[in-house]
Length: 128
Image 1 (tube, one colour):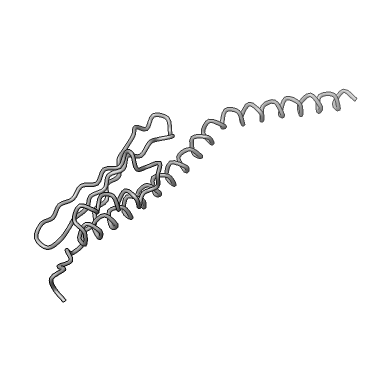
Image 2 (cartoon, one colour):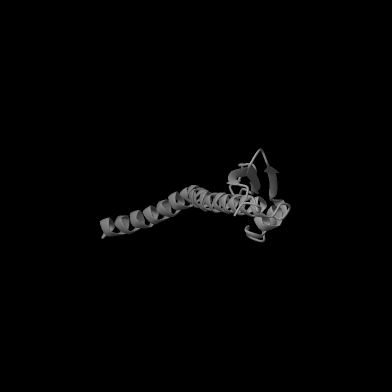
């Protein structure tokens, strides 16, 4: 019976050790999860910036001074206040540049900004 008592106490110690190992590994798992979420959020913001740049350039090429409002309308409402849209109009094209800052949820990683550009030809209303 002595060996059975030792076997039981050994199993109890192993359970405690496994719990401590799990608790020690938990912060790493949380960090990996946060990095995955951050990566997905960054991809979403890049997509929003690209859509806004295309929309702003297309509308600005057809109706000057209306592109900024159209570009902002193409962005998710919570991203609009921090987004910037700039235009360059060299020759017969319109280039829209959209920048949106990306907040970080991963500790120790600073805020970054994503910038996307789109160019569209100007419409000439006098041509048939």
